[in-house]
Image 1 (spheres, rainbow, N blue to C red):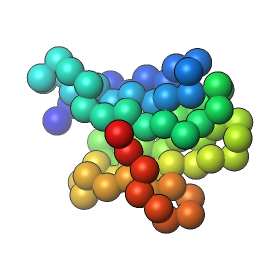
Image 2 (image 1 turned 90 degrees about the vertical axis):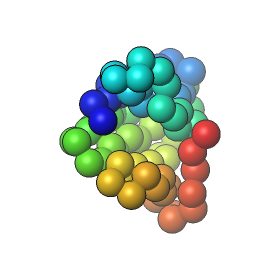
Image 3 (image 1 turned 180 degrees about the vertical axis):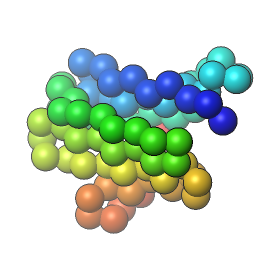
Length: 73
């Protein structure tokens, strides 16, 4: 599915589904500033100023933080 990824000043990263025109999921756990977001068709990598790093594997629909614990809402 085609998607758009957005980072916000509230410390969230949102992944939007273009075909369904809705929010697919939201990543939380960052401080107020997202450091960077990189995305490919199969993965997303985001980091915040609180040293949190989250990687999303779209092919498996899994979400892992840098310590390996699941984190998605």
